[in-house]
Length: 242
Ligand code: NAP
Image (cartoon, rainbow, N blue to C red; front, side):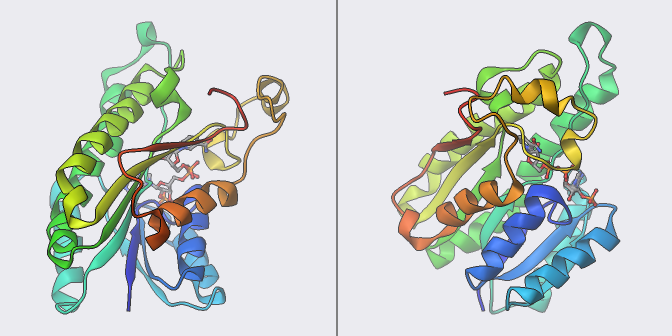
């Protein structure tokens, strides 16, 4: 059995990634923080794709919760390891900096950056020992270009890009790759409330992307065929920023 963990797998891009990795033959560990009903729907879709999966609830920004959840998984699977990790969980709390409360700054960085550390650090050793691993981090065009009204989110996503490049160099020799996927506007709950009609005029492709289009790139980076690609960014943004 090959195992893949997708943080924030209950909805949106994470759900599409779970289905894609299930189609590739992975047993899927679906992490979520609140939404058990949506996580169950993802599990059902994974099963429809012909694989099994399980739900694993923890808040990626909470070190203790994350450690306990991953430790209990490892204790129940002493002979196995998680070979694909997709650090996808994320939130946005947009505001111009001049009005940004400290809480909105901290929670976005906590979930994206501390979440990356909290989940990746304990799983890395097994990947190195087994001499195979794939880590795919969900950034954003905001982390490359910087978006006004998203100083917190841009900082978090820019940080994850830099962390990816550093870690990729640490672990490449052991056949563990670390890459970033950087979506533009993708139709999920996260973009609800945005003015799609106006925004899509700024996108050369004249539309928002779909979670499945992001999942395809994640699937490729997770595959054996992508073994010589590491420390890289794949932008999926309809030409919004190149
Ligand atoms: P979404 O539909 O809002 O889903 C967010 C997912 O993250 C949910 O599964 C949620 O779990 C989970 N989550 C949130 N906080 C968490 C935490 N503390 N611990 C564990 N899980 C947590 O968002 P999305 O649009 O699919 O975004 C997924 C990723 O893509 C994010 O990193 C986002 O920044 C990035 N991204 C999205 C877009 C876009 O346009 N949609 C563009 C660029 C980048 P619950 O269901 O339990 O709440």
